[in-house]
Image 1 (cartoon, rainbow, N blue to C red):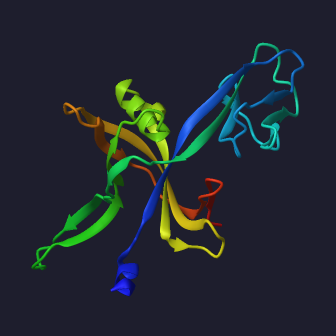
Image 2 (image 1 turned 90 degrees about the vertical axis):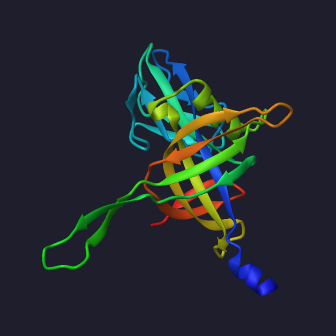
Length: 222
């Protein structure tokens, strides 16, 4: 029975990368800018909204959180550092996964049955979670719903970590990453009960890789 239970247990952990940024107004000769949060990596750096190229226009040192430009952006220029704060979703009560395949049907006059081909997928993760104060993933998704955010402001990086599929390195598991739109449909607050909300994480293409649960770092497969 224990062996059967091991075979049938496919535990997953769901981590989420939430968009963060820090802005600076450059002085005339300023080339160094410090990111207070000191994230391990930056998603990108922009100057007046224009994305710059790492190692060409700037370097980033995670230990000190320092962005160092090869040339000063210039007085009054708005420098913005963007990154994802990756955290485990700890108050999710239900999480499903649907591929929602799109199909193309064809039947010629000589055929008795239709031929059906899958032409694509519309990935979706139905989700229900509690609204808990200071639980960062819960509050982040709820604020998307509360403030009716749209476009890129309603997107989140979703990491599906296969705890049943470890690598040879301790704490590192095979994983998938997908960037999705958060669509929260409703909030429920029964009298005397925990407030919860439900909806779906929709869209996106999967990227295969590994996830280190100790450093919360995703590495894409080569």
